[in-house]
Length: 65
Image: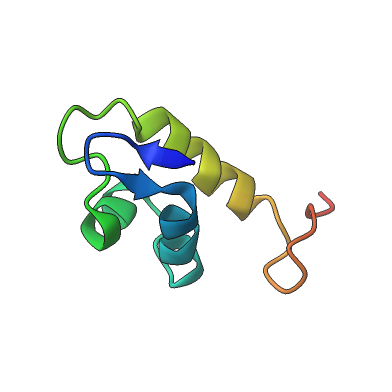
């Protein structure tokens, strides 16, 4: 599935950028070029970042607050 249609960046590519340390939309944009044209994907990428930050970094399971 595409995270950024303008740049044809997939959700897998965004996930890989996050796995490699991108922790902000700007960092994901730098790594993948997503969010560098119209910006409509900013919401989707922000949600992916928020979802990932709520997961356990070791197991990928939801963190217990």
